[in-house]
Image (cartoon, rainbow, N blue to C red; front, side, top):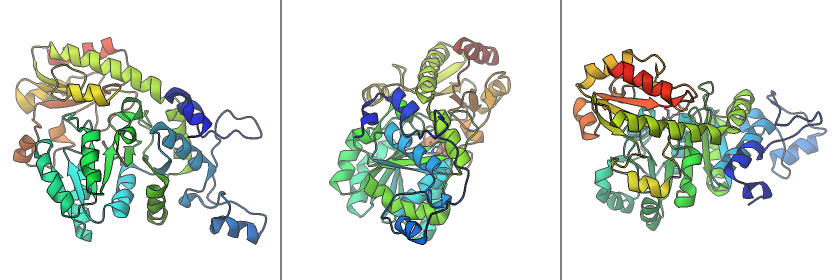
Length: 390
Ligand code: PLP
């Protein structure tokens, strides 16, 4: 662990990986350049052949702005190393192609793009893939015994906020010599540290809480240097490295990650409690509520419950759409984790592609509205929900 990694998370968010320059910039400048000049052919060969570290070519990720960001990303998850990507899906694709070729098991619900990649595209390459719901974990051991090399899940998951036991599943996965990957996008490293609980790798859509302002599309992978060194050539040759401008914006956002997420945690809990008391709301799903099925596990493995919640409106899909259409502050949009509050009805967006039977098997009803709580005053957000529910 480096000296800076002994600091608390907020300090690391601000300081880790920052490069100061000859002009006294307090943070890493944008090296907006595709290539780097060397004093001699011998000097460039030293970098190409790995004898000396240096900036070489931006698509390789060998650019100071990108490498500074990666130090900060690694430090956030307590990881040895990190790789930055042009999107969350780019990070997942490179990860699955590198370490998942012997077979992937996806547990629980996941982002629609992830389900499509694992369920429809990777099998075209001959990669065996399997899906288990939370109540089907008795089927995990046989799949691992049969050769699946990677287990992947989101926790909390989308949109039911289901919580999976990272430590318990990691022991089970490691007993078979397989890898555990956790998508930590919903929780963020502020609320949950999967590597410390036994996961081998963490993946993020940095488009969400890490970016935090709905203005960057990016991804990140964190884990051991050995596992990430194997991913590096895939990122390089699939051309998935983020642009230096994006890397710089993401590092900018990370400096305020902790305060943003703490505020989103407290506002989401206040909204969840207010919604639980509302007569037109049939159910509220939020890991911080005592009534939530996975509350005890969440309280054990998370240090905050996150800024996401799902409400189920009385009256089904049409009633939920009518409520969402009356929102004045919550915008109807598919993403999450930004400073502005967003709402989406899973049946119309993230889970639109599933059959009604499959949605019901996954506990996703037409009356659900998923809320991503932003940085507005929580009283204003509660008032907005109440006027829309009336
Ligand atoms: N993982 C989760 C949990 C997501 O919600 C998303 C996108 O919504 C992704 C991964 C994919 O990320 P991106 O849109 O940055 O490619």
